[in-house]
Length: 359
Picture 1 (tube, rainbow, N blue to C red):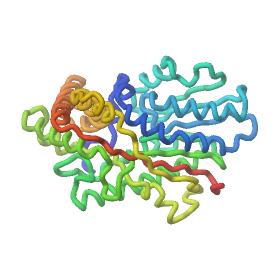
Picture 2: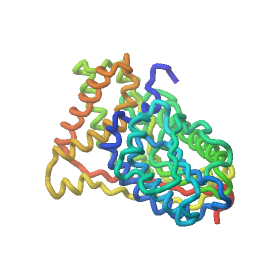
Picture 3: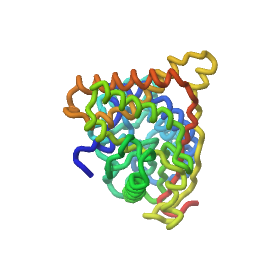
Picture 4: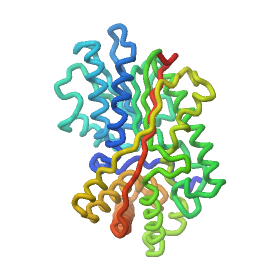
């Protein structure tokens, strides 16, 4: 990989922006909560040691509050109020941990509220490394974060999404996806206690690679081309922009277990794909406000995708340069989406894994 390419992930936009504009991710994660509740009910919680829950890829924490509350309350129903619960929030060192801490301690929906002996902890490390000691994790949760690859294998001429690339591009990214997924699983298997459960959900895709937000991403790509023409970014900067967050079909998540039902010591307990409600489109159908719809879509793109693309800018650490890039990309995308509003049929793919044999 060229050192000039953008990193696979530039984390999410900071200062609480992701918390404010990641409602789609919240909707998708909410659909998987029944799987988490069942997983917690099945985890062995013997002895008096602290129960360990890990949120892999926490970002700024807003979308973690509901699943962590659910997991904590399900544990409490089994072991009582005195047993300590450790909740680890893991994300990249470049994550906005200040916003995460603020969320955990000030949000009205924070999970420590009226819950004793619950101790939040933060880990600034990639989940493509081991983040906790061996056999220490009872319950793992990861929502949307495992869509990210660890490295960008090559540039994508004409786009920033691999599914819009050539056969060679798609094959290179598919290899990286498969290798990273197996690495992720092997590391989590090492960290989990026997009988522990891991619930993972990511943006799903159809068998042809489409995943609902295709129109938004294509319009964003057109906006980037326009920004080159207007001199906002250079052609070289644009060529280096690659996004390493890639939806995939459910079959890709279960593939290692089709080859080996006990892959790395894990067993597949459940797998399911869900259609995520497009709440913004439902609102648009009621009020006809295309500006509000376009603004919401553009802000979603800004907080989720733009930080990674900005990693390809010259002097990418310059706050003013980044602000101009973000603002121009958001405004251009909003204009395009307002001209042609359309629904989003996004999927979320989820699996539940157990350390040892599935019951």
